[in-house]
Length: 401
Figure: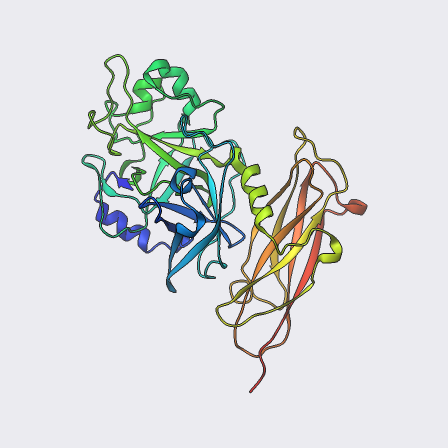
């Protein structure tokens, strides 16, 4: 991550910000490359860029979590590449890493930013990439640290291509990629202003840009993943050269970066996750309402199943919002709270929702928590209800001494 100001200030900020404990370092031992990624809401999968992991077998992929509880490594059991990935035009640059066991309870879980209103919004990018300032560009670091910076999604790669035509060698169609430039406050280095007329001189000291090693890292809007870091480029046309280092691409002022648009990838992500849940129920009779707690350090999963009796079509979205609620069980102590949106896709009529249960070795009574679903879109609840609530019981397995 390259920052407008001193990278040492950036390092201090990122390493002490617990909101990003779910952003991981991704190691591809097959190709000796590294990237970044973000833990998804199920606690079992990492969202990253396809180009970080596409050539490596899952056994050569590992991820590192750094939380207040310490450093933990997890291995991959499966890597799922978006089948529409187009390396030539940097489209659909997204992949899931399925972990061999649940992530540490201390790591944040993230939901997807599903709205397509990202342009003009400020976002926070997080990753383990090279460090530097906008004036010098990126410099490699011997030990990767987690960093964060901010920027604004100004346009899409498709609109950028329309403006630059042959000055841009690849063809990113379909508005599938979000774009931001690295501003230093001057018009001279406002790349998208000078190249497209989208003048915006940046966020001052908070502004930054991704660098090598940040690939696959998340771009957050309102705490949800809106983008997956894909690439950095230096562009010019007809004598207009905004880059402060015009003869190299190094994430310096005047350069441009791109993120795979998660609102466009949500069906791939959702359905790949659901296919990876081999222990999830698919019919009401398979749902367990009592879940054994597990021992300290263990995480088990309680499943809820949402059924839809209609027919889902591509042009008629069907979705509900959901959130967990405490009963006698306490979020963060007995289970991991979650709040998100469930989307049905064509052909789906029963979709599971996972809630992770935190094990311990403390003898206690059985405890309960709830999942509320509400705000249906494209359908209604039975009998005119405005919300539905399901309960799960966490069964204690610790004997009193």
